[in-house]
Amino acid sequence: MVLKDTKIQDFKLLQAFLDNAAKGYSMNNIMFRKKTHIYHSDSSEFGMGGYNLTSGVAWRFKLPADCR
Image 1 (cartoon, rainbow, N blue to C red):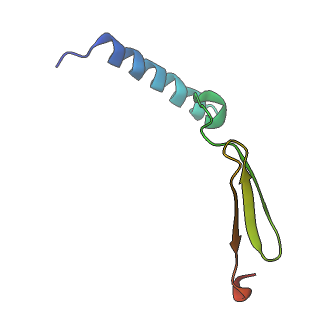
Image 2: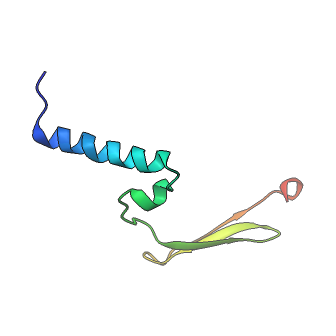
């Protein structure tokens, strides 16, 4: 089986990521990321909620009394 150059390059990049992870680097610092959702969230004695900065939509989840 013959691998395309792009597949070989992908493999080498993955190998570099894994080598760094094995050295103790956080995967969050070595992986490429692009944020898709930006929101703030918080909890309270009644449940948790948040606000999406992109859409402006707020949400709330009230916890049952026996789970608080």
